[in-house]
Length: 112
Image 1: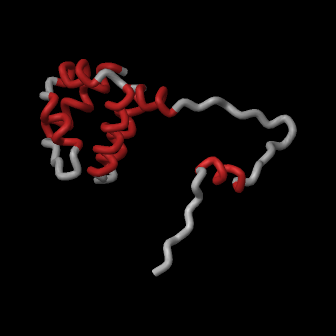
Image 2: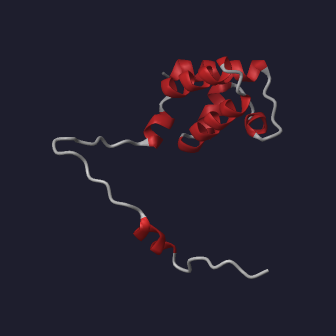
């Protein structure tokens, strides 16, 4: 089977992306995903929505993204959950207890 050819220089990929221009008078806003992910209120709402939808994977992904942008050590201490338990519940096989979920949501609610 012949080898597939790939681009040797990734920057060539960007040359094929079409350029879009905005209509005159339209302005854009700066958006910072890190700022949203650091917001306890935003994360608490997102986690609550994931729970209401019954989506445990989304819950774990949202919490993991939040922990990437904040100080993890202070969070697990405030939540009263051991560091090991917190990261175990975020693992793909993790199955967080209702008690740990309640502690995480309560900590985010108190921080908001």
